[in-house]
Image (cartoon, rainbow, N blue to C red; front, side):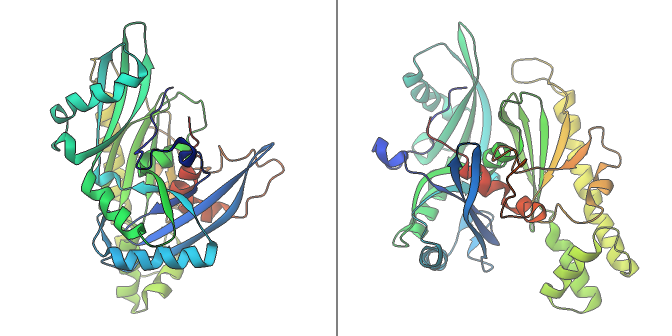
Length: 358
């Protein structure tokens, strides 16, 4: 698969060869991971996470760049990060597929740019885009294109300015998550459900390419809020209770159990809806879509006891927790510094750290 270099803000080729730390950013937190290449795979180097105060980032848009810059500057001091690959929220992105006649690889970007406004509601000069050549024949390219508003990226660049950390690439979160979860070279079709604090991301990957993304405003924070309200405890204490009790809520009152079940039911309905749509509708070229072989679960709250079982009920594809280290190392002899449950929160950062220049 031929892949473009994403968002080349800094043109010198040597600069883009710099090894970068993966930095996953969301409305409420950021996580970073460094992967160091060894003979038998990668090992984890520097890693960590920080909370982001409410209002600094809203729905993926940087609202208070000075506050975010302060967080970046603090991370620079404590971990000496230099170059990072950064995630962008899929709720601000547009994804479409395009077929182009066979041409020089160097001409593909220009051809996509000419047809951009036919597919997304953004003027070409106000957009930044990336693409994957999903399939190549003797006469054509089948291309998956991802587009974001330039202003979105400008907000992050403003926050990085003066922090001492340099972003060398930006990538839509769904692509990063897929890179960390889907085994390299596996061309089967999978759904990824990223259960975060404020939202759930749903991604479908087929033939090694992200084909579909969607965000649902349902996250683990709703479960924490229900516990805090009903038990009259702090948010941090409620979070601890949630992690200990899990979805089944043993020992928790009926109101909280109902809130848990309601949230999981919404998630399951959304997963089922997107899976049904994928299976029942043909692709842009009139071909039947391949069946989803497996549903991978990741995200900060994906390891809650009982979640996999409750989410699996009523779905036609098996659900399992992701091994986000699958493309990092074999784990036969290497024990990662990040525990399995914690690693589920680092899927985006790990996927970014796995990016290598092509």
